Image (cartoon, rainbow, N blue to C red; front, side):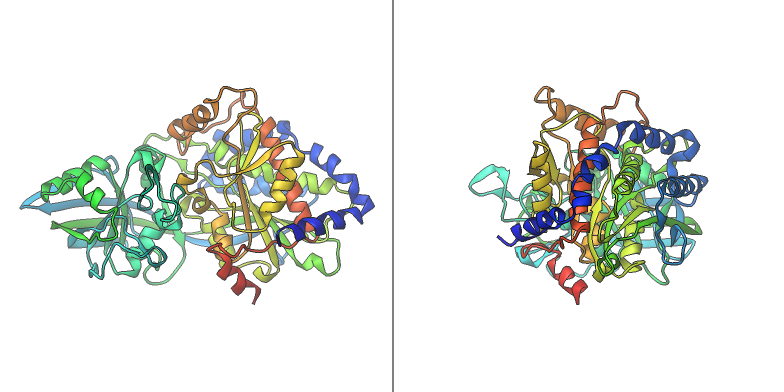
Length: 551
């Protein structure tokens, strides 16, 4: 019931501001598919070289975004008077080798076709020698589910092999479905993210952690892993060992993992089935792994681009609503020289930031709270730009009331609904539902919750810092389209274009739905900027962080 209070407050707040009462219509109409396309066409052009951090593509991207914010009349977002926040990172280009010895036979795997691996450790050359290989199921310790894949087994110095995603536990009442009481059923939890798997491996002292790639549960093919594996890797600059990764993190092709298990006398499907029980215990593959990673390292001072619209209320202007979208993509393939243009991912999100800023500047009076527009760096490298901002905020997180993140805009027409990827976590749900209804649309939960989209984009770092977040998608129930159209266009994108050079500008995109979605995010953000204060729901895993933030 408490979620209705902010809605009522919002309506009252707007009704007492006659100057703003008619403004949203003009502001909403300022959001233009033509301008969206022009921004995307520029950012995803060959000239921008795939927008990889630490390249000429970054320099051009940062300059363009800053220039467009200036044109719109925004102010520099950094309190030091600049448009950027420096994000110090270390870039490392790995050349790895990986072999294993089981039953007296040594097998050398081919990089990057059989596996990918890197290291975030400091030395130029990293070695892991004669490391026992242990299969640890899903590699999860989740006490709230009574789940521990490690069972106290000492994995220090060992190479752990693990399955992708959460344990997929069948529903005892309907074995065709997943048990909603375990790991949120169909939805992915943070335990299913590769970042978690590497973090727990580092915590437990493993020397290497290798994830077995499976295309169906991953929802993307090996080519996506491969393209990321051959690229330069980044992490935030730190001294000593990386607390969030083992010495060597990596991925392995499914067939190669099966062959490794078979050499040890085990069947992959049998072990995978055993890993779906709470009784599972780690299984030694009776062999050892050897890794060598040679890194060409450099220090990169990458940049988040930050612009501001200062609030109009003397007190509330010191509180902030953040709109974010990452500007980076994968750059240029060092072998083929193909450019990873990143048109939808995420030139479209940066273009949406521009349209939102334009809409806010159309208002006759700035909202009460200040608005920050942050184009983050290195999202594709592990949400690093957002992670750095959350750890080094330009404005106190206690005074940051919400983050609305944009990662990919619907390019295939209008939909009957908006999917709330962050559904159930905060009172922002009520605002989104209200304004979706005003568009004649429904707010629905994430139709592809198994993808774990909550944990794969920048809003995660804001949520982990306790800031209420919103992240939406429109990828189902397209209007005036066949029933299978949504699956076709979305599946086609993920299968053929996602993190591929073919995610490039297209003249046949239909951004009518994308414009609607941006208008929706504008209306939600405006309510918050006018005084509605979002709160975390009691059941959210981020509520404790939210409570700490307010203290």
